[in-house]
Each structure stands twice: as structure tokens, then as C-alpha cells.
Image (cartoon, rainbow, N blue to C red):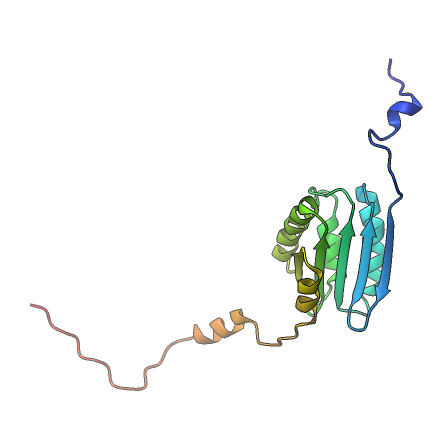
Length: 166
């Protein structure tokens, strides 16, 4: 038999609530809250909505609650969404997770996104996430400092005489 009944298509665990998100503009960042997300399509819908805010705001706090972790982020194009959201080096995305599984998923997403130049970090604590979003240390990139030092070295004083061994 190749046909499936309606009952077989239902999820193994019935959903207690539908996916919901709320995006609000705070004084100095955008708070995006996502709850009860179960599918990648729901994640894409949420990130697409958040993309519109990233045109005007550079600091975004993404808070995920009571949702299934997503580990196949590259296959589903979620890293590319973060790249679009964090369109400039000034953009910062803080991922705030509820629970160990979501935190592990966020840490994996952070790793892949940072490899592509996205300024993103994952957090378990909201206060830490907000501190990171708000910190504005505008120090030059350390790589630029290293490149300046890496140029030819010129000695100003006399050379030391070679010590003879013999």
C-alpha cells in the first residue's frame, strides 16, 4: 500500500501551541522573540521578518524559547539569512537560548556564521547578551595592527657584534 492516511501525516507529538514571534524596537536594539518553532520554514519566516528591521538597526537580540533546535543550518540556508541580516561589520546579532539543546544549536550556528564574517554570538544569559550588544569599543581590528607591525623592521641603533665561539 502506497497511500498514507491522514493520521499518519500528523506529527508524532501534537503541538501544544503554534509558532509565534514578536519583534520590538527597544531604545538601542531590536528584540526578536521566537517561541514554539518546530520547522525550518517557520525559522525562515521569522528571519525574513527580522531582515526588514536590519536595514535600520544594527543591534539585534534574537531570543528563542520552547523550540526545537536546528543543527542543519547550512543545508537550510540559515547562515545566509544571518549574513543578509548582518549586512555590515557594524551589525551585531546576539542569539539568546533557553535550554542546553538550543544553546548548542546556537553555538553551532554562531561558529558557521562567524566563519563567514557575521558578527554574531550566542548567550544563555540576557544581561550578558545585552552587554555585548551595547559595548561599543571601537578599537581598530587587531589584524590591522599586526599587519602594520609586520612590515620591514628597521633598526635605529648600531648592530651588536657577533659573539665568537671558538
